[in-house]
Image (cartoon, rainbow over the protein chains, first blue to last red):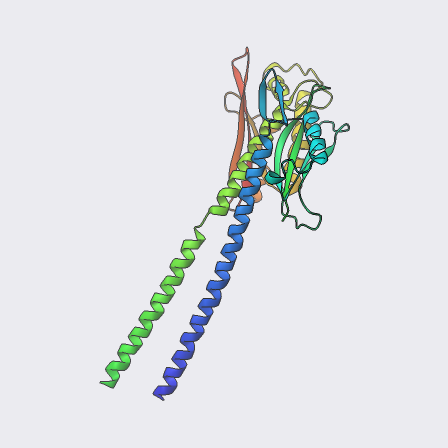
Length: 154
Length: 163
C-alpha cells in the first residue's frame, strides 16, 4: 500500500515537473519571439530616424532646415541616384523598403514613389513604420501632407 | 515512529509544493511587469502624434495659399475667411490627414484645439474613438501657435490612444 502511494506521488511529482518544463520552454520561446519583435521595432524606428535626418531630403529655406519636411524634388533625385547606383547606402538600409506618399491637399503631380528598396521580392513583410512629413514642392511653393512608409523585410 | 515519519514526509511534500507554486507566481509576476514592448510602442506613438501635428499645421489647405496654422489663427482671432470658410478648410485638412494616417490603420485618437483661455474650439474637438476603449492610455503630440500682434495663442493636441 505504501509503495503504491509513493509511486502515485512520484507520478504526480514528475507530471507537475514535466508540465512546468513544457510551460517554461514555451514561455522562454514566447519571450524570445517578443524580444525579437522589440529589437525589430527598435531597428525600424532607428532607420526611420536615420531616413528623416538625411540631409539629402530636407527642405531648406535660407539655410534653415526643417527635420520633418521633405523636398519632393530632392527626394526624387535621391531615389533616381539610388536606382542608378544601388550599392550606395546598401550597408545602411539592407532589408528596408521606403516609400514616400503624398496625401493632402493635391497630389496629382507626384502621388507616391519608392525612395529606396533594398529588399528581396520573396522577403516576408512586417508591419510598416509610418512617419508623417511635410512634402515641399519648391516649384509650386506648396506644402503638402505626406508619409514616409518604411517596411522592414527579412 | 512510522506515523511520525509519514507526517514529516507529508509536511515536506506540502512545503515543496508551496515552494514550487510560489516560484511560479514570482516568475509570472516578474515577466508580466516587463514593459519593454510597451516603451517601443509608446515611443512610436509619441513620434507619430507629434509629427502628424507638426506636418498638418504647416500643410497648405486645399485651393488656398495659406497653411492650416494660418487658417487656425483666422478662426480663433481674425475671422476674415480669406479662402472661403476657414473652419471648413481646417476640418477638411484634419479629416483627410487623420483618416489617412490614423483612421485607415485603426489607430484610435482624440483631436482637440484649445484657445488661449483654455476653452475648446468646439467644432474642432473630435473626441470619438478613444472613449470606446477600455484601459486606454494616450501619448499626446501638441503644438502651441502664438499669434502676433494679437497676444493670443491656440494649442493643437492630438492624443493617440493605445491599450
